[in-house]
Image (cartoon, rainbow, N blue to C red):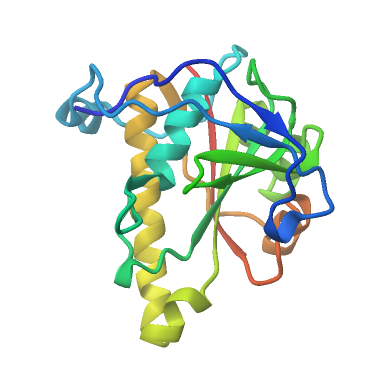
Length: 224
């Protein structure tokens, strides 16, 4: 069974400094524990999965955001650091951001997901969806969704072992992770669409990304 809405609605915020975004907002949001079982079967989710570009204006909950992020890149085996999506050599080159527009328990802004801690680190204040939509060739789904997930990759994590072949492996991996988001969205009665048309440098600037990261996929998510 696919996971449904998970955890409690408790979350914590602090001013703890975190890695490459030290000196920015440094606001930490602990996410609710995801659920590992739900009411929608994998077969049902596969049969009704579609790309959805229009959403209503209802906000998401923190639990829904938590579940989506876990499905995308969450840890499934802490002893080996395995994640929900397969990765060549278990090198995990993907990074994940969420642009918050309408979520009941989270202020608008750009946040980076930390899989091992299952938490968000704020990297920028304010609603950046209009700017992100412009960078994505003015696709309305990006500006009208409740949140936007943005997958990036640090290619060197994989190419240092697999050389140029590693680039192909990363492109495979982003497909695995994006499909996880699609299927989890179905289970939560949400809609999403994978977007690959955008201006890379603009996206990097909007998300305040480190130089070594490169954007690969944009997935707006909203209520149906």
